[in-house]
Length: 173
Image 1 (cartoon, one colour):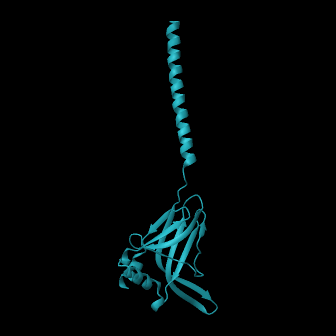
Image 2: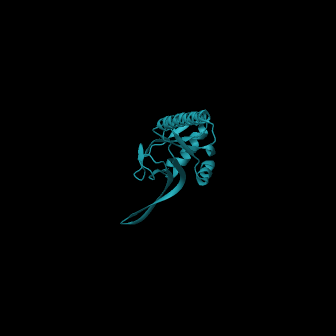
């Protein structure tokens, strides 16, 4: 009977040793996975035609334009390095935001912060949407397939389609 109890204890000791070895291997694997994991940016973008209201001593002035809104939903800060318009393959038009109503590039955003980039829509030949549509057509592409791409300094790109009103205007011009 003593030999049987000793064998039983040896079996349980062996099972415990195997279990602790597997648990140690799992803990090391999880630690290495977490240590080498790169934080992922979570960014929401929208592109819409907007009206900017400015109040001064003489009354209210309105300006029409394109607003690109970028919201950082990740837990870590992000830096927006560029905003581009893609319209097929490797065809890209970069935007430069010099307007006083616009954030500047590069733009740093902490968790929950919003950046708004503004492109004024002037009348006539200075109208940005007309110029964009003409540039895309000159390259033999369809302006209705344009995509706005927000690129971060990490190289990640977030793409969004402009709203239906912008696509309608691009189609007309």
